[in-house]
Length: 536
Image: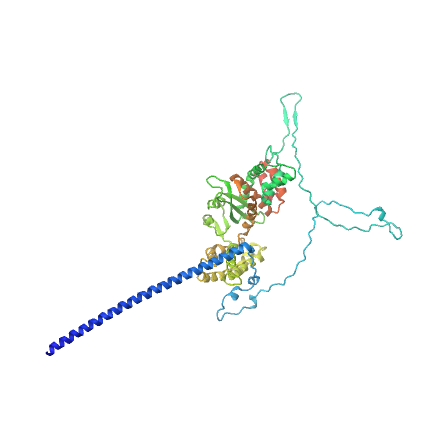
């Protein structure tokens, strides 16, 4: 075989060997690709398993929080006061967050000295001087007024006095209105009858005093009409519950002119508080008996004319605050409910946020966390408590001085709280109780800090919540209103009671005056004279 043929054979063998190596390399590449895909698949499975595990852990934490919250709601105290009082006075960040290297140590100016506690002596309950006294005198019999040793007559040298508070059950009497009639003896056609004042319920048996008594029992003392029926029966009087319900509706309608003036006065205030709470009305057009209606409350804390106004509405829509605040110019203090958005978006109204609601979210988060565990929630509560401590110190100051103090003392705390909030938002799961509290604080921030802009602005909406609380207590007793007319009457009567309480009036005297004088009012001035601050 010549050299050329030998070289060709070698080349052929080399090509075959290279081809085999190429095929082997290709198989290895395919195998490597399969292994890579398998590893990627397993990696995705591990990642998905990790995500699923984290979701389950978050869900478990949420369930644990719900369990702790429900347990506290069932068995714990409802007070929002922090049981660990030391967190109110210590700098929360210094206790709960790691210190940065090189951070300056706290100076003496940063510490707060808590005064020692002194127990106050409890004052005995005394009987007011204006209460009528009935004297019961105990004397020695005549046979004991001589000295057994020498027979001399004893001389009175003083007396021991002990007073008891007694009560006479309600006294009921009938008022007979007698109108004298006169006739001319000379002519048969002339007759004249003496006039009498108009009554709150003409030709009815209820006097202004009785109506005032029933109204206050139901709306001020949360005593339902069926219980009052039983009380009157013990006194020997049969009063039908339906009749009393109709009387209450008539009293509410009678008070409407006074309510209109009260509303006009309230919308003149620079700050208005608003809140709403459910009420059940059985007979509403187009609604089932189980559906919810709402009682809206407006309140002002003006020193010269504090006022509270209730308003019944069939829904919780924004239409109600829009109507109640039509033409209003000033600040509106409300919670986070967005039904107030439309009215607060008008240029004339500045919406303020309630720090009590923000604090309540953190209190709920604190109750949901494990016991004896301190964390972010305690930081938030401590800072909010510092804001309230400032408000407590300056509540008697004039608005201009309150503004200056807030800018100097409260604003730095709020700035620090904002920095802490920005840091915490990215570190806390949003669906946890703490995450929800942080989200609420973040969403309401611009409204919450609005109280710094004016010394007249309040820090929270407690004025409205305190005003609405008697209605909520009463609702637990009488449960529902039968009709829209009854709900509207209740709103009017609650308005007058809470406004009269805010003006420190004697409720019975005031309502008796209303039911006596309002039916005979002929001018706007006559009605204005019955506004609580005018009557006082």
